[in-house]
Image 1: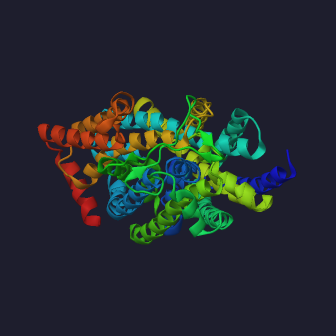
Image 2: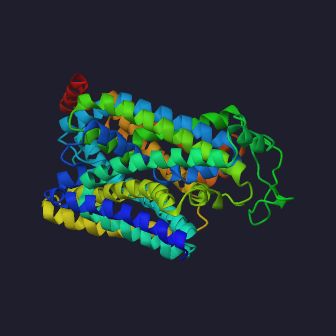
Length: 519
């Protein structure tokens, strides 16, 4: 290990010690009961709720996946994705947050998303709870894998070490941390990590721009790449059979720009629809101590997202101008953020910036593991199979499930050529289409029935797989992001099946009206 690598390691270890300390501090309170462990006793303040929601949402793909996408194909894909996410963030906080906070209390004081859906429809056989829990387990295993890939790529590039051991080290750290402190530790550390993430993005962006010769020089360097700076065209790297970009006379080779039609724009904007079904974000709405504080949280979250997303996209563009041939595959391009930090900064300071990637990864993976573990222990183990289970048994099962889910995610993450953005986009579509339409109809349409809920979840979740693996490869108009068609199909199924089945009973309607009036 070189001296600079050792110094970066010292900085990162200091950060990791602070995060572990937060977990230890909250461990006693978190382990008092499952309510504290999974939802923090509904005690989050507005700033913590906002920062923890966005930090757990964005994950390592914000600092690696999104800059890598911009570095590889230019501004179009990355920009429209960022715009969709920014709009989705604002609307989700505006229309869903307060209603869900009130309704989760009215619906039997639900502390997980599957429990909320189940209580909302007063189901007896727990069909909705079972289906929603299974989808959470499936998609959060994929989501956790994306975080583990981030850890592996980060540590491997910094310390010039094999990918798999580095990835497994990241898995071990995340599991230990989540094991200790639960939701409160996760949310408190996410507050700190959100600050680190946005500072890291801004610092690397400014440093990279200066090193590349300023804004004018950056634009001059990338302006000649066909489609790189266009919103309705996309750059097309010329690659060999192995997917490695060709280089000629020291410059990367690009084909003619490809068209980026309006359908592609709509497809990328559809990323915003995913927010309505993201458990890690929705739980923050449920956990805030006072519903009136959600207005402040919305403003804080929106500003944070706008700054972070625009900085991440611009870093990819600056990186291509600064070092046009450093990364010659789409997978390697996701290292541009860590490369700029390590090259342009003193190792100790670079280590702190690298901690921004680690922060993003931890803040997401702990949420994913915790929510998935709660889906198994609280919703399946207690809610379906062992209804008389006590809190102690639930906590034991939860930790066993947490370890098992982490191991599955690690297996998925073994491929070091995985593209973080691709993995995240699939899991994001899964949650957005499975839970997004149902969440909106549950909160705002009294006529929604439990049969419609089941049909909508199954249609949305299944269509994500069908569209991604069978229809999308056909290309053309079918090449759109799978979230958009799956979201629409799920919504159609909810409406049609609800109208074809008997209306909800009076108690369900009464709870709906109670939650609506609380707004």
